[in-house]
Length: 418
Image (spheres, one colour):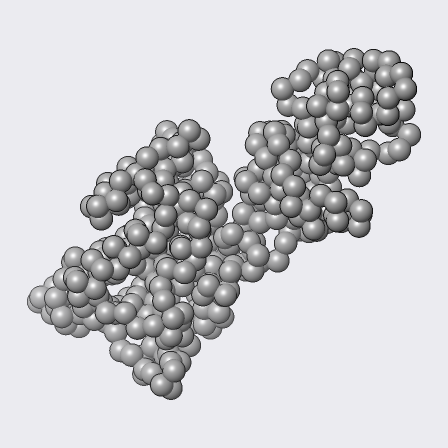
């Protein structure tokens, strides 16, 4: 093993986790080569920032950590070393300012991902990081060299350490196709099956409702959902009606629980409060008011402001006889049952659950079964809602993997063995 200064480290994957690992490695004195299967790096990062790059969140530490659910224990030390504040400070070193939006989400001042990525790549190249594009990883050969397919043919690469930051299994067209999972499983690495996270769900709308309201936002609305273990969640926000069902921030916030409930029991039932700022008895009283010659649709619009997609949801989900019973119709407006029957396919999801089990890693994110091979980013088995939490943990885990590789190289250098 050479000294750290002469060690060659291969970073596989050019997303935020891989690039952050590369930065930690090059600053630590290693020689760094980044390999990516796509014609350019950071494609999913750029897509995530298309509507405004939500880089992290400015909420209290305890609330922030709670977003990582059952993997909080594993994510917490990564964020302790490089959390939201450190990430913002790092962005500022690129000459890019940030601001906190009204919801607590943090954005670059110009809201865009491209300037940040462009500046970062320039800094990495200037520091000596070498990029190899259209290099698709195919595992290891008989000499334990990394195998790549490239436009020029197959290539074998020897590296003293490897950081895998290959993404999850969603948005395959941008490079995250999960093809790495069987390659690691063949080497004895515990890999949990990839599942959609921050995803939409199928409902099974009638053709009339789907044709009329697909693409319409439902807001404001409160969703209440109680899982099979009795844990109740209540969230206010908005979601989008799709051709097949529902998606959007409010649905994504509950997607992990909804997905698991459907997997266990075949469906998940949640309730929509279409008028979250109105008391239930007030709603019932307004529905019961005499409407004279007006239609019920006109009555609901004038008395309660229910129209458009909300009126459509009532027609879609409430039994016809209940429209003649003010108490039942009013109760439905405040707690409209919506049954979800399937998560949308993995490739449509914003992110991925499952992946390399943390139990297969040491505290420095090195694979126990493959010394010198480290993992980072979305290919690890964790999930979090949108809102900056995904990106923050990707950056933090990439940095941890890069520093872990440096420590391992140092421990295995000739000087360390004397």
